[in-house]
Image 1 (cartoon, helix red, strand yellow):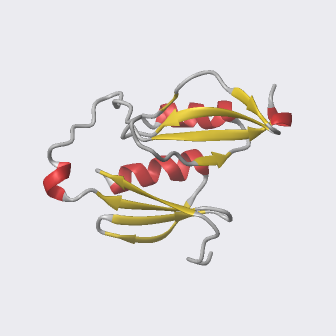
Image 2 (image 1 turned 135 degrees about the vertical axis):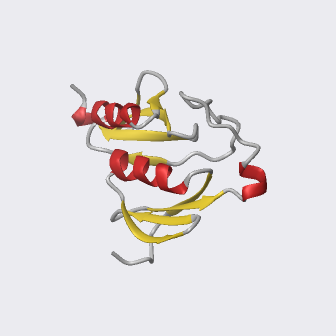
Length: 131
């Protein structure tokens, strides 16, 4: 897999390895590169770069269980998955969650989700995937 992605997101996190495991398992991404404090995850269409929050700031951040939702960000990314239900179950098993009922968009169903540190993102499935 090339490091030259068509689209990508940089996400600042407290625990890069834990969040990398979350997105690897929920979204099927795999690691392209790993260094202390930086993990690059990829699929055919997306590159997700996880950067460690600087230590001086990170020590003031407490991740609760379940995590407190970080919903005041001005940016939210979405990823298409084969099944909202399956991705939601995987997210819950890794400390994340689906946040509400799915809604319909043009050709897809969507649901907001939260990762294991409280970062909000959106999952989408093809409209024909609904049960």
